[in-house]
Length: 480
Image 1 (tube, helix red, strand yellow):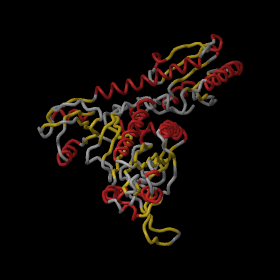
Image 2: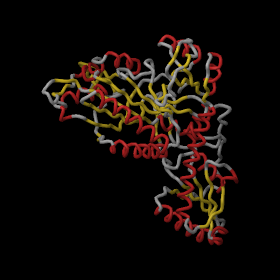
Image 3: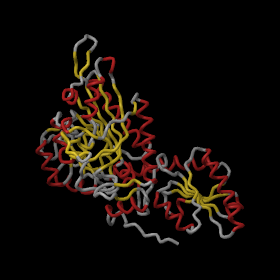
Image 4: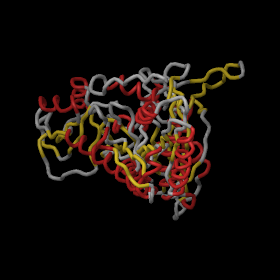
């Protein structure tokens, strides 16, 4: 029998726990070039489910998918000053092609605003061409110095949406609409209670007028920026001459947005829900929602157990449930239980000879370990029983993550309490500081403004750092 190594407890070394889970649960491995990542089939299946949940939401808002080149002329990036300045340290640049030095260096796509700007300037001529609503599923390259599987790699997978509008109001509406889409996805599909908010000027996307974000608290109290939506105003339209004739036959610049969510969201799922035994997948996104482990000792038992297993599998599949039967011959049932716990499958069905006789199965839920999470249920109506349990698990994960976030978010009024709060979670504070104040706080505490929540309490208070009157609440935290 293969040996199973125990994971480092999360409380002992969260970073080591995370890295071990990613590899031992068969989600991803390191690529041969430093900082690159190979996404394995189990990890890709999770990404496909994320894609499906997002894609249907995008299309419901009128967005269409398209594909654009990964090679971008260097001159494109140089057209928008803030944009090129923001991305310059991370660029991968091609200078030789086909053995010849290129006349102009080519950048491997770090993001596609400039390529989109070029195309939109050719496609948009009249107000009748607007709005233009496109999304891409692709990969991008950013030459990161410090990398971590899923969270920060040289190349990563994502979607990037790019829209163009006739008015500032429509542009703002789309920016907020896509943030709402991300929030709905995170809460209802991934069971992650994100905080939707506005980024500070210092944390804003390079070249944007405003960046909206969903911020999540991980199991170690740190923040993870999990999806962003940018109001680009007329900045890229002016840089790339995206103009249209309005209804009065007057030339106007278009207003554009961009928005994205990447494979780092897989990291969010791992770090939000996982425990010392490994992953816990939210049922709505889990590659397998149920694993069935047949248990038998001899050929006679095998025949009756596998017959019941196949029937149950068919019933669950008919009920729309994603099922895996673990019929590996060379492994003990105990090993299989631990293996699927590590992989985070939401529910497990165990069926042996006695269960066949009693027309029952053992049904275990991943989010409640040990005997507490196991019950014996009838095979009759098992499809509905399991479906109901998956809904219950989904809600339980959201409730648990919400409680953890709320328990580790502290309202503070002075700098000493602030430092304590951000060492273990979030600090919720009144803020009236400027960029210099924000920089000093970051240098002294490693905490940044994660966002100004969309849901503000109203009223006013006193800035914890400057002592000045403040009219907005900010969430500070240390971040990945």
